[in-house]
Length: 103
Figure 1 (cartoon, rainbow, N blue to C red):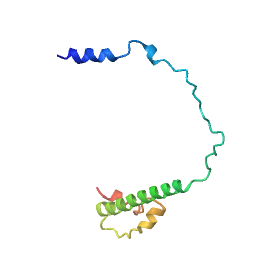
Figure 2 (cartoon, one colour):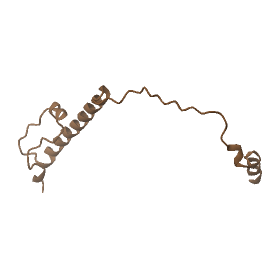
Figure 3 (tube, one colour):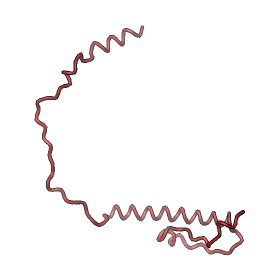
């Protein structure tokens, strides 16, 4: 039963590669010689992208520090800096040796 559809397909298949030859129609490549060079300073979009990345990393560090303080050194006194501080300079603000206290 499967032979019928397969044979039907071969009836419409091209028999040689000559049907795929390139046409004689002219092809024009338009190269715009007046393109402006890429700006050397970051664009608004690039700056916004960098700011967003810093915000995300800062938020991650803020939440990680909060969790690590509760897990590793809950008895030490530590005032976590505000989220704005993490967003300006994304890094861990935990006290030195806080993560090493858990045995």
